[in-house]
Image: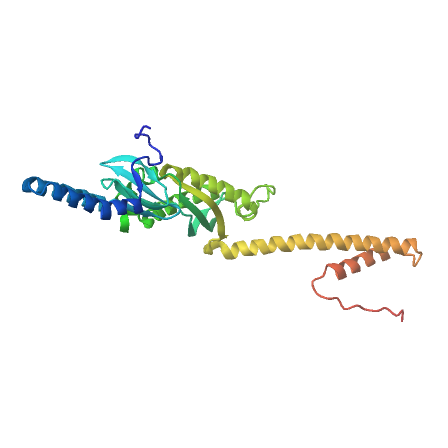
Amino acid sequence: MNNEVNHEYEYKGICVNGFIMLLMIFVILPAVAALWTLWLADFRAVQIIGLAIFAIIFLIGCSGFLIQQPNESQVMIFFGKYRGTCHKVGYYWLNPFLTKKKLSLRIRNMDIDPIKVNDKVGNPVMIGMVLVWRVKDTYKVIFDLDAASHSVGQGGSVRTSVLDNFVRIQSDAALREVTGNFAYDPQPDASDELTLRDGGEIINELLEKKINERLAMAGIEVVEARLNYLAYAPEIAAIMLRRQQASAIITAREKIVEGAVSMVEMALQRLECDNVVELTASEKATMVSNLLVVLCGDEPVSPMVNTGL
């Protein structure tokens, strides 16, 4: 395999079971050293050199052990060259001259604090989201993300804060780009237009796609991106609330008037069909006016009874 390719591939070098290597280092190697010393007991110079060689082998063997848990990986670097990524789980012994950089492949959760964004029509809105992400390509995280290659925590692991900072900045940029293409509320001249408030899953899918495009260059994958906060900015929140209330009142009035007209029409038809009373045109107009006042009024109407006196 060509080790110069700029993407992740599995480590194919020496990888021995750690318990077998422990047996060799602490049992077999000392026994061989002791037998060899007895065999060359008469040659002191050769004996010293041999013991030194066995001691060096012993020390080198003790420094190559690796313990790896599920959903973790070790990026192997041999004198500046990428030699693959080890995903094996368990206790192993590897070439001690390899530089190992630990990366977690587990899913991580990030809560993006609400930021102020101008929507499509220029209204300032506050938008926040929840992001679920994980490392996908360990090569890009280590070698393409500059800060990560120089920020290493305990045990050679790449510090989470470095990746979090990169993800947060790119997510903010993608959030501004996506939400800037939609209005917060439907506009009067475009009632069928997709908006931030009713976009739902469509907005979330667009947001996830855009963030993935930005994070792919660093080997990071977005599992889910979802808006969790949406509101007008404080400076226009009160005005927009009054606008929403006025729109709701108008819609409710339309329904009330429509129902009242239907009820008045039904009342006139029943009176005529059942021959209850014959009304002149002026009396019908008065009746319609009174019924509409009763049915459309906000406050209860006090009836007045005409006794004919």
